[in-house]
Image 1 (cartoon, chains in turn cyan, blue):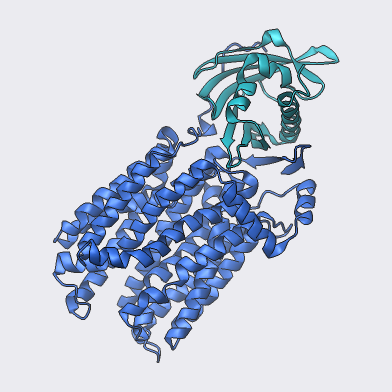
Image 2 (image 1 turned 60 degrees about the vertical axis):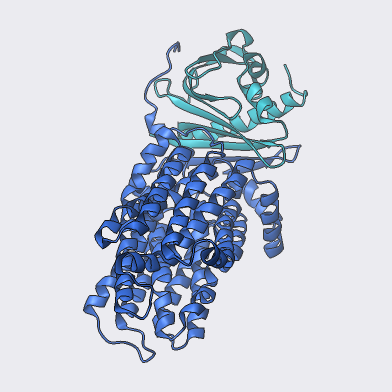
Length: 155
Length: 460
């Protein structure tokens, strides 16, 4: 099966572009909300050079089984605070993702006319069989992000 | 696609967009060729039909009122309605451009048989409404189907088919005139009839190919449920337009100013290019002279040529937009046209006219595609339809303003000189380019095909 599906996930937030960009990129902040429910980011694994060409690394761990680890290594190929960042990713440890096929994660923060921000995540290419699962994962992560921003979900 | 609502009332939308190859992108846009052929006939052949039916030249602007008025009213409504539409058999956008194409086909078929000006006017309104119904959802269709990294290809494929469709419409008139003689009792030549018949076939035929070859991305059950709950018909569509205007991203508002200059300029060009060519090359502005008739024919060739340039360069702009950004491309293209139009009226050699007008052809390719690449990156994907309609309002409002104001400018500022009108259009396009600098473009979307190198440091 060829990986040719791009997953696009969008949600509007009431916070500013700046606030959302910070929550997504600052290691201390992103470690508090990234990961689907049942997973967490190991705080001491997060490193991030927040600049064009900068490297990023983090490990997600299954809450109930710390032996299950998904590692993300990435390079920021676009980094425009607070509008967008694009990371070329290598993800290992996820059964649905071939670690030898690079993924692209693009996250856009678009100001709307009413002080809100539209967050648009574009990631892929995915194999069709796993695209659904990963898009659902993003949806749950965005709910976590919302909880984090409102102070309801910080770890 | 799925859509769920959070406690804060914000909807999460999920879409899965397969990457498309070039053949699929061209097939998806083929219907745009038929629609633009229809527009080409409207632009080039309808006014001569008015003339054949003895309408006077000073009546032509009011007889052409259909264009901006139907564009202003119909496109946003169709856009808002299509955002709320789903048919398992026909899709979301396809029902609209299929209905529009059927309308175009019928109108094009009937047009050469009109026997009075009022009949031609009525058909023009119906034809323009059909064209608008077909064209607006086609823009949203591209945005729906293609992932961001392929949007440039999609919109510039539409530019390609715009140039190709209008060129073939003009060429058909030129060719049929050479080979077909005779005319209807109302005085309409059969060669005009032949072009309309060809347009009728192209319009429905090409749209059918696109409809049958390109499936739409279906909504999930949750989104369908939301659509069913949101049934409000015409009133809801109007409210949707108003909300979209109020909530419009600031950068999209700035695009309206760019459009004010560029579309005002384009209308000035279309209205005065024939007079300008007649004056600068043949030294006349008297429409009753044979030289003026030659100028009309030559202008057709000049316009055909810039449309050939349009479809020739359209795909090259994709590569430049990917490397340098859509904003840069549009500024550069508008400046090409500005320089070309400032030079154009100073040339008295008719063959040399084909050189500066290349600039307009390049700009036309950009105008019909590049701003959309930026616009769809500024708006939520659930509202592509209504925003594409609003962008069209940004086109037709300048046209209406031009209709109301340019007469006074032409007499008071430009000395009733058509050459000055063309230079004025060039200056306005330069203003549009300058205004583009004000827009903060969402950073460049790289093509996913460029993803080759692996990030180092992973331990598998």
